Length: 157
Image 1 (tube, one colour):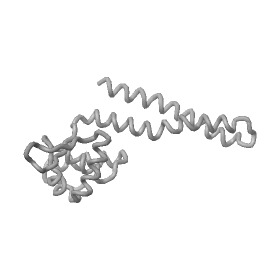
Image 2 (image 1 turned 90 degrees about the horizontal axis):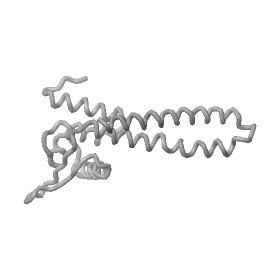
Image 3 (image 1 turned 90 degrees about the vertical axis):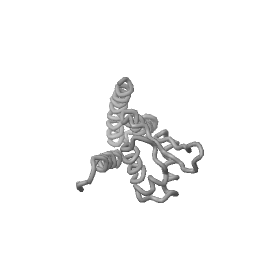
């Protein structure tokens, strides 16, 4: 890891690396790292200077993040600048991220695997293939139950 000049810069790198580790792209990860390290909202122009990304790239990504309720974008009275802020409650952010991963990675197999199993259940030609699929399905059910418990526990904090 590179040595940084301030705690804020070191913190940004840790947050950035964490976001990348859970699968976010470079720009959203960079934006989150900057927004988590600021006490107040920050203008798009400042974000552009800090991240090195163009205003166009920032606007597109911030719109995507806003649609997912990750950030809030607004204008101040008598100002032409657009500002962005992020809730710094990392637990809420993590809960939402877990829900997204849950709905994208566990829900589709839970819905589709029983259909596949039922479709080929009585065909001896597919016994070995179905054994693999059934095992995967059992594991998916377990992950579904445990992930639901985990998210519920985080929400109760």
